Length: 259
Ligand code: NAD
Image (cartoon, rainbow, N blue to C red; front, side, top):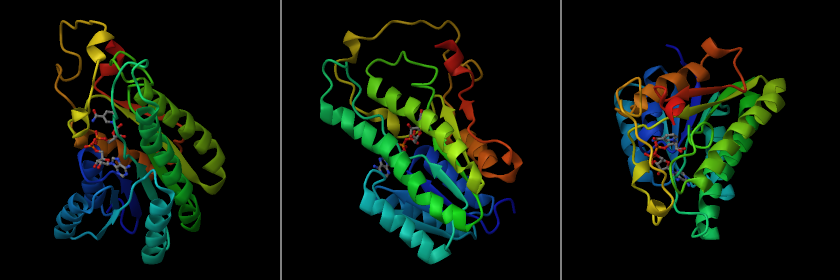
């Protein structure tokens, strides 16, 4: 199979895009290490993957916590001795609110999970990928902060998602010497658990925008599914994209070209 013998870490694998991608990479033969904040959904995922005949491992870790991440990657080192694929996917919307109302703690939380978490994941992946003679890293950014800025109250979220793209390009250049490729994806609206975050006061700053034909042109407004993203991640994780690094792929049905 495509990813036979490959070890893949997926962060935020307990739900949404991470879960869909973990299942897809496993279906293509990868041994998946599912990392996330709570163990229960990860163990359910591992059970599902194992039923399909592929090996998987669940590790509870907060991606923004240095000690947690060190322990998680140490476990991968002990069990597998290498790493081929990293999908740095864990992320939160945080609290969406006007900048003047936003508490520094709310700002810090989004930075910690989305940006520090991405850094810690890549930082810890490098030595393991070097042992494997190279690797593929895919960072899950967003259309928000890269092409789209109209969702009210998302200034902190947008800053992290733009930061992830800048980090992707710097890392691609720096890590090319180790044959580690680093690419980013920018999904549009995808079905997942992320949308239930608090949004206090955003009605005060919302700008009304009307779309006559739905806001995702390719689907007539229907959200994408985690599987739609998973297939793109698999491409960027595979040798089919062996000459692609520092690139950004929008997975949004042209949503971000409208807004
Ligand atoms: P989701 O909430 O279903 O999944 C996020 C997962 O990350 C959850 O399982 C959660 O437990 C985990 N997580 C959160 N904080 C964590 C932490 N500190 N440590 C470890 N795990 C943590 O949402 P999703 O939409 O699948 O989000 C995945 C990524 O996709 C995020 O980075 C998000 O910004 C990005 N994204 C989502 C959409 C969308 O519309 N769903 C669009 C663009 C980008």
